[in-house]
Image (cartoon, rainbow, N blue to C red):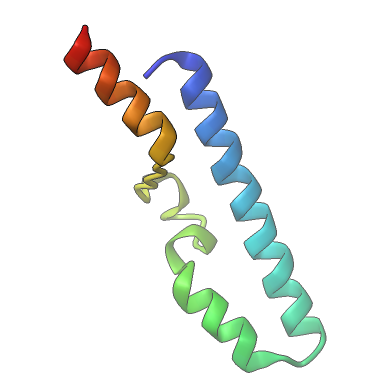
Amino acid sequence: MNNEDVLRISQQRDDIYDWVVSRFRYFMENDEIDNALCLADEFFEWMDPDQLDNEQTLFINEDELKERFLEITEG
């Protein structure tokens, strides 16, 4: 994985994090507590500042994975 891939994945993760936090705040401000709790339950590790940078994040793009497989096997 090259630096460009790492930056792209980091940006994806940052975008997801921003969306989750924004959505959580929206739910709380609109008294949609059950929705906020469901979101927090799913993304707890991402929403906790003490765990955010330690949480593993795996992204798989099937096309990129297949392309990489072919690069390695056909060499």
